[in-house]
Image 1 (cartoon, rainbow, N blue to C red):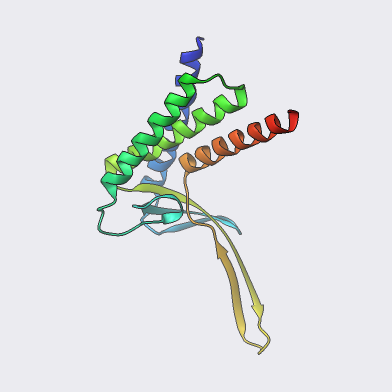
Image 2 (cartoon, rainbow, N blue to C red):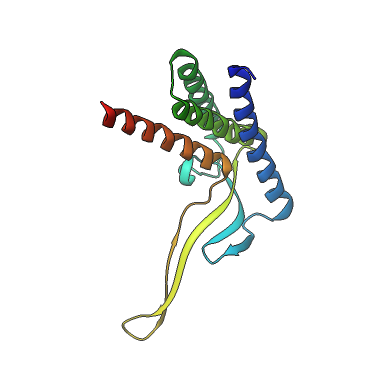
Length: 169
């Protein structure tokens, strides 16, 4: 397999897994419905019109076009970097993960005006407070999807590769 075909295969696989998982969730759950998997993990269907962690998630939808343009620019930037520079295998895979994830979320934004998020990690603990009342302490990480996961893993791969380079110098 040529190097370009390998790159295309990685990106296509990420896009396929992302879109398949989102379509499965959309077919299985109503918006905001939660399916408990573990005591710390639910699947829940959320349409995020904003960016990461639901920032700028306004109901007006005015942010959709600028976010599409921003996504296209980011994808073009990473493709340019990929083509113009020599990368280690880890760095190249990280960039491919970022491109694939960004395209997966871009498809959502173009097709439905919002990104489909569905993975919800949280922590809840019931306890009796100092006054003897039943209380709950909780933490919810913002819902995300496989594309977000691939982007995050790609960024971490680039950071680790850079740290290893600096350490070896």
